[in-house]
Image (cartoon, rainbow, N blue to C red; front, side, top):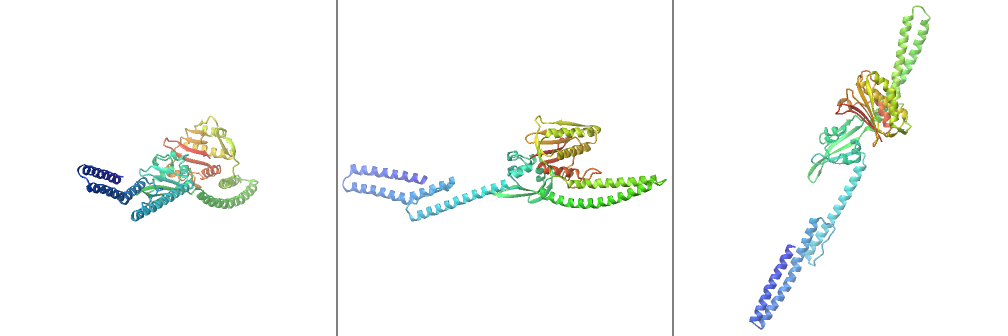
Length: 433
């Protein structure tokens, strides 16, 4: 545009000078000088026209091309100007614009496919910006964080997201992978890496859930062990108790054999106790499939409260009910779920030991049940082991209570967590899907 303006300015100036010269010659002279000046004016006009066509117009066309590049308008094209060299430049430019357009279209298609793939992936993907804030999180990652929408985590630092998974991600060094087991019984393989965008490294996390695979492997292993042990123990104790019972009957008819009969009875009781002990383990692998139906959660909670009230009163523990005004409705098997709730309240009471409170809360949107106790709490090291097979913090614990709870809740498609919060309360939170 500047070249074109200079050209027209120079043309106007030159024509003005020639016009003044023509009138000067016209008034002072006559004859052939007048025609010479007129011819000079005509040649100047022709020269200006040719100069414009050969120099200015190609430059103007190239200038338009620069404007198109500046505005990134790759769909427009330049017109040929009728000059071989200039048209070669125009052709190369148009070919370049076509290639840029195709590259941009291909890049958009790839980005769109990548977005669809990330959003549909069962693997969690969390991308951070240069300030270590969450730039994006796919639906799988939001679910792992316990969020219902990406807006709940986007724009926050990982340290600002109140979930154990976020705390574990912060501990993973760059370009490293770790397997973490959380207090909600979930197991994740987390990878911390980065990618380059516009010359800057953007960190991101890949979170792969291993929960179901690990649970299946664990269950297959302990089912086999339990069945084998139960078979051997029950067969052995049955034979022993039968023999002891026969001996007790024989010695009971003899004089001065009361002490021997008492010892035999203690031995039989011990066999029966051992049989019940191993049966408890066997029951874990024989949990029936739940018969799901809509049930008012407040009613189930009220029933369990009445059942556990005497146990808690003996320990001077107060059951505090904080139920929703409109009872939440959940799809569950009342019989199985009541067993779960009784186990949770029993564990909370044992954690408190004496003098404390157990708060039972229900809520809608989402449907949620929470049991919070004022017990001694759970340390971080113990949290990750809570739902592992046969792990127990009790001196005489068998480590099957939380396994039973885990199996039943998973069969109900619930998500759950057990941890001690910053306010000192230990919360067992159950969300119904």
